[in-house]
Length: 214
Image (cartoon, one colour):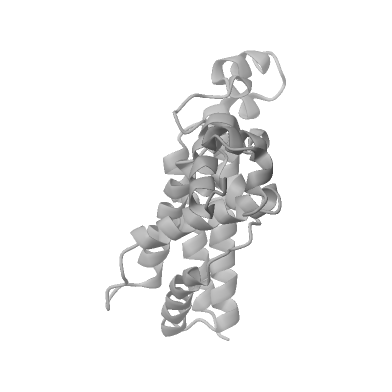
């Protein structure tokens, strides 16, 4: 019995939320679909091949949900919207950021969105290199921040016991590191506000750099 690529990807994303990236296997996906594991090798040569397809589908959905750029919109406004929405898209899946990080895009249609963003940066006075640096830095920030966030909090909102704030505070209670104790909640809670502050700081930095003499 042959199975198309789309049902395999759909089953993979479903299982990802149940077992995480490390627990995801072609054998488990085959069992979910009611077929034998070798059947999937007709469609995917290995696990990474499947992950690339899963990551591409997540990014496709994210890109499709983005609205078009209004004529008077600034690159800063676009950046806040685009990268905030990417984080939300990654958070829908357990280990979503780890899955997307370093994955190979299997659909060139995503380049249309990149082209539009690069053109917007160009209109704002960025060189192509500066625009690339800005996009790359923002993307890396979203991926890195979300990987760390998902190590602490699951998509259902459950906290990893290793990052229990009360236990952390107790462990540091008699330590000579009062500042380190105090920043527990700043490091491992309030992710929405922290993400927004960091995002705006990066945008402000590139805004200032773009105003410097070339």
